[in-house]
Image (tube, rainbow, N blue to C red):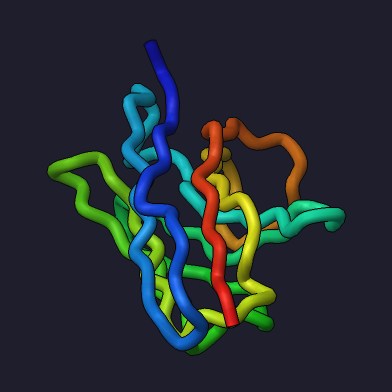
Length: 123
């Protein structure tokens, strides 16, 4: 069965770090983009970063450059999101998604989604 499985969320104090993992069992892994998105309470889902695992090209939303880093381990079919200097406004559900096409397309349309992992940052 093809799916994306996120893990690594949790509760952390402001200034702390978390690393999220997205394990893909999709047959298209390596030929499609993988990215991370966040949905804060009461807000729309927003893109954070995307990567093309086969080539390693990465793309970031302007608002997230510097604190968040996306990377991959193609042996494990896993994409990571390293999050540093976390802020309370980073609180939300974090989703992994897969799509074909431009990996810098961080809009929420036409993507295959995981179930999400919750991140809570306290002040």
